[in-house]
Length: 80
Length: 244
Image (cartoon, rainbow over all chains, first blue to last red; front, side):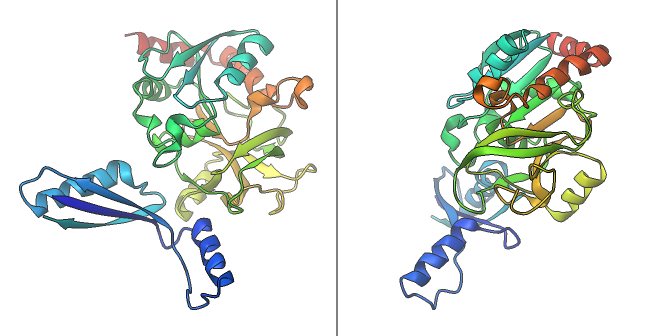
């Protein structure tokens, strides 16, 4: 099983890196890009019996380590 | 009095802290590798600055799993004084010993300069020898010192007088220009509810001798001498818990 974990700063948290990337894109002429939020992406190769089990494990990993719940939230996609 | 200075792979201010304790304050001090589990009878623990585990994942995120951190947590829970400086502060946040988290500096620049911080409260083991609202000129050196916590956590910190150091101007004014990283409420350092664990981004250990430009940081270390003299029982209790 493969779990993809996307970690981003919570919407309420200022993202100085994302803001800088937005400004750089505007400098390049991409004024259509309204905002950029920068985050982290993890691919977990998981030994699990089914997608539910893989999702559960990835969720625990994100809660305990991959994301800091004070500032970050995450989203998980699981594929067989 | 004995200082334990924890050394993580990537610590780079461990010897500065050791030097301040051993050669400036002239107290006993020992460097303790992060894989050790014993604090070796120390009366105070310092988590030094640097880039523990290369700052991989997030600053301090991997260091919290080092074996020594279990002993540091037990020591802190028993009332022992723990100081986290810069990366050490980030480790205390990730380990849950202090509330909140660090974001990248709002400028995105790594800021390496002297700043002024105001001592907000003197009832911690690391500020006991300071004058109320004393202003210290000490250096910072960090890329992620932008302190953040949810609004209710900030309210609680302020209400409980847990904000211990704040970025100010040389005249002691709390202005946005004096804030080097964007921290909420100009917060430079905080303590826990029990007031024995303190974390701060500036480096007092790098400002303990006039030869390096400022000796204002020395008061943080001298405070321990005063605090341990006033409340030796608390600390010896913390040490004895660890020895069991």
